[in-house]
Length: 425
Image (cartoon, rainbow, N blue to C red; front, side):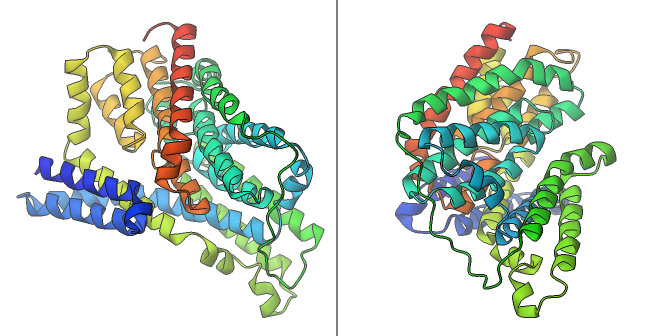
């Protein structure tokens, strides 16, 4: 059964990777592969109830991610419909191409530590779509946003799901994460920035032709209210999680409800036709549903490998065959570009105890860095990449050719920096 699951997973993954060649939508491939893997598991297992129990438990965490993604995308679309991004674009529109590259990337890096890499990718990619009309330059910027968002999330306890897991699990403390991982994470971004910078020479990039079609102009007051309230809601989601200990999607849904009320009040006196463009219902319709379904399929695929013990077996195989923890964690980071980093970290937390590696041990810090930044090597290796892929329609093959090697060099540079600063793991 395990062999068949791995074969189906690899075939599905290959179909996603070569979407532009076979001309089959990646969301359809992911959904078919995900359901097919679970079908194989249940039909070849003698414990149907147990399989369904595992599926339901995974579906809870998967649904949380999808609701979070839907809420964040809707809020961003709502800000966009109110032309809220103009508040930022007016300030950075006329700077040179290279300055724009550095500004957007560094903004994503620091914003990711405050929000998280997924929300940051959604916000920044949406912003770049308003700033850059040149599709080639825009794609490169989006690729750098993925790298920057994942790098920024690696040095914050709330910036990435994996660092949050290690933080909540007691393996790492907030001060240790920030102090030991900030510089390696920054290096993993700066190296790709220098490599890509040669392609951003010259004057400011031209903005795209506006796609907005609202006949009713938006007032500066309404634009500012929606922009700052939406951005404030996104920033307060991690705070809500910290104080209530509820999953992040609960804070996102609460925020969506609040901004829904705000927009209803702002446009209460308008006709239905004028108000429609500025409504949450309109924003939800504009949200990229195929990308959400693609994410669902990917997570279902990975969940099977986790449930059947494939990921744990792979980790144990690495431990027995290699033995060197530095190499093992580095490889786990590379695997996180192929398989979601959450189950990989969960498997590592199960394999290694706090008795073996104490709180804030270099092993946990190195694991947080590698799994947080390694996902940038492939476009579907992180939630930020998947979000960018959906919003900007980035092809897997294009990212593999143009961005993957840059992200890999940055990843290795960050590893070298970590080892120099903190000693061998």
